[in-house]
Amino acid sequence: MTLIIRTLTLAVLLGISFAASAVTLEGTGIATIHGGDLDAARAAAREAAIRDVALQRDVRVSSEETVLNGRITDSQLTVSSRAQISHVEVVDERRVGNALRVTVRAQVSDREGSCQAGDASSLRKRVAVTGFTLQQPEQARLGGLDDAGQMLPQWLQSGLQAQGNLQVLKASGTQLYPDVMNAPTSQQFNNRLTNVIDVSRELGAQFVVAGVIRDIGVEDPSAWNTSVLHSIGRGLGASNTERRFIADMMIFDGFSGSPVYQKRFQTRGRWDAGRGQSSGFASAGFLETPYGQAVADLVTQMRNDIQGALACQPFMTRITRVEGTKVTLASGATAGLRPGDTLALYRSYSHFDSPDATPELLEADIEVTLDNVFPEYANGVIPQYGALENIQRGDIAIIW
Image 1: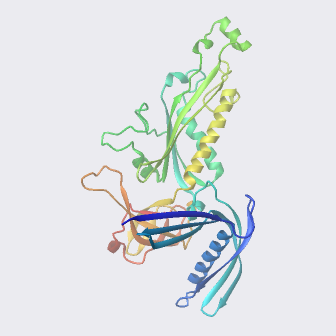
Image 2 (image 1 turned 90 degrees about the horizontal axis):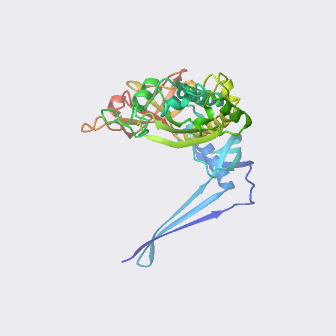
Image 3 (image 1 turned 45 degrees about the horizontal axis):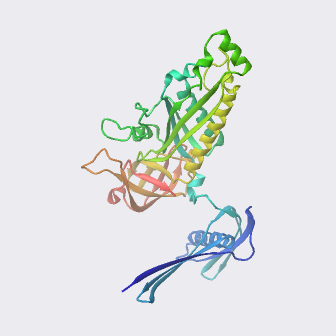
C-alpha cells in the first residue's frame, strides 16, 4: 500500500488587485442568537464580519489530500488571509428573526513579514532593562566612559518610555552576568541559567533585557599619547582616532528564563573629544563626537529591535491571589487591561526530580473575566472554584 500526502497552496486575489497601502473595505457577518444572548451574538457576528473583510484583501487557499492505493481518502481545504485589520467601525446592525447581521468598515493592509499579534498587541508588556557589563573596563578610561554599563540601559529605557507601548522598569543597577566571557550561557551555582527568573519576579517584569559591552576601545591606543607629536597628528587627522563599539543584547522571558532574542550590535566612529571634553557615556561631549553620533544611531536600532521582538509576544501576567472564584492579577489599567477582558489561565509547575529547571506551563482550559481593574492589579472571576481547578498564586494569565 502506498500513502501519499499532496499539499497545494494557491494565492487567490478576489476582485481587484490592491496596492500595498491600506484600503477601506466593508464586510458582513451573521450569527445566531442563542438563549436570548444578544451580546454574544453581536460579538460573533462582528468577528465574522472582520473575517469577511480580511478575506477580501488577500486570500491563501491551502489544499491537502491523502491518497491511499490511488484513491483520495481525505481532503482538507484551508482558507486564510495575511491582511491586517485596523480602525474597525460598525456601520450597520440588524436582527432578522433569530439571527443578528452586522456590517463593519475597516482599514486593511498587508501583513507581509509581520506576525499575528492578536489582542496582546494593544497591551503594554512590562520590560526590565538591566545593566550592561563591560567586558574590558580598562578600555573605558579614555573619555571617562566607565559608566557605559549603567548609561546604555538608561538610554534604552528613556527611548522605550518615549514610544509609550511598553511598561519600562528601570534596573540598570542590576547585572545578570558575573561571568561576561560566557554570557549569556553562564550558570549559577544551582545550575539555573542566570538569575532572570528571580529578577523578573522581584520587579514584576514579563521580559528582562540584559547585555554585555564587548568592545569600547580605540583602534590605535598609541595615537592618544600625550606627546606634542601625537597631539599634532590628531589635530591634522594623521592619526587613527577610530573607536569601536560592540555590544551583545539579549531579551529573556521572565517566567521561564528562556531567551527570546539575541543579537550583536557594532559600529565605529572618530573619537575626537579632547581631554575633559567628555564627562561620561551619553554625555553632551560624548554625543558631539562622530563616535557618539554613531553609537546614538546604534542605540536607536537596539531600541527598535526590542520593540519588534516583543510586539509578537503574548501578554502574560502572574496570578497573585485566588479566593473561591475570584482571581487577582499582577497587572491592571496601566498595562491596558479593561473590565470585560478575558485571559487564558496556565498552571506553572516544576518536577520534583528537577526543582531548579525551567518552570513549565500547562493550559488549564479555563478563562478569567475581569470585572474590576485598578492601575497596578485587576480582579476577575472564573467559572469554578480555583481550588477545584488547581489554580493558585504564581500561575500565569495570558492574552494572545
